Length: 374
Image (cartoon, rainbow, N blue to C red):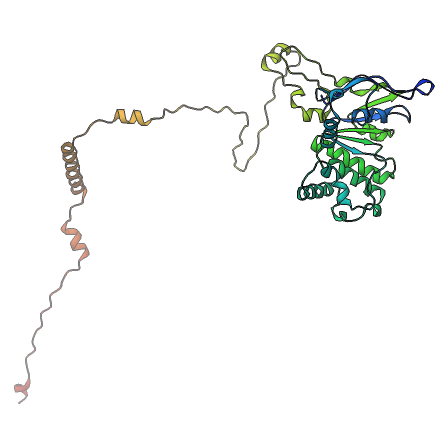
C-alpha cells in the first residue's frame, strides 16, 4: 500500500466564502497502479492530487504514505520525499525558458545536491528515454509544445521516483502529440513499475488506466478499484485477489493467485462416467518400407541383468602362474597336432599329373661313305 487517506477534508475561505473542495474522502492507492482521477472542472480532482503530492495540507483527516502519517513529518522531510519519491508533470510546463533542455532536466538533481558529472549522465539517459537527446543544448523557448512536455517528463523521471503525478498532461497539446505523451507515460508505468496518477477529464486516457476514480463535489462517486481490495483467505494464507490490476500483480508477486494443491484438486474434482468414450485405434501409417507399422502396438521390454564390478570381482577365481603356463603349453601342442591332422597328404599321382613324362632320344651315327667312293 502506497497511499491511504482517512476522512480527508479541504476547505478554502471562511464564512460566506467557504468552499469545501474535498469532503470526508477515504482512498487507498497501491504501488504500481495506473490511476485516473476523473471529474468536471471544480470537482476537486486537482485539489486531491495536490494533497496526495503534499503540495498542500488538509484541513481535516490524515494522509498515510508508506505506513507513516504525513502530519508528523517536518518541512525538510517533506521536501526530501517530494524530491526523491515524486515526479510532477503539469499542464503548464514550468520551465526556465532561457536555459537549455539539459539544465531544465537537471534541476531536481541540483536540488538533491548531486555531483555535476553524475547529474549530466542521468539527465542524458532521461532525455534518451523521451527521444530528445539530440536537442539537449537547445533553449527551452525554442521547443514546440510536445517537446516541452517531453522535457517535463524527463525532468519528472530523472530521480527515478516511485510516483508520477500528471495534471492534465495533454491539455495544451494536439491529438497526435497527446497520444505520444500518454503512450510514453504508460510505457514508464509498465516497464519500471512507477505508480501513475493522472488527473484528466479525457475519457480515452481514463480507459487506459487500471483504475478510474470519479469525483463530484469533493466526494468519490465511483471507484472501479473497490474490487481490488485485499481479502485474506484465512489467518495463515497469503492475501490475494484474482482481479488485481496487472501492474499491481507485477510489483507484488505475493498478491497473485496461488496454484491449487493436489489435495484440493482431489477433493474438488469428481469422476464422471457419463461421457466416457472408447479410444478408436489409430490408422496404419505407411512408411518407406513395405511393411506397415501400427502406432499403438505394445512394446515388451525385457530386463537384462547388468553385471557390476563387484559381481565380476566376486566371480573371478584365483589363478596360479604355474597352472596357467601349463595350460597355455597344452593348448599350443593341441593346436599344432590338429593342424597336422587336418593337412592333406602329398601323393605321387599328384606329381605325375602335373609333371610331363621325359622322353629319351638316342642319336644313330651314319656310316661314312668316303672310302667307298674311292
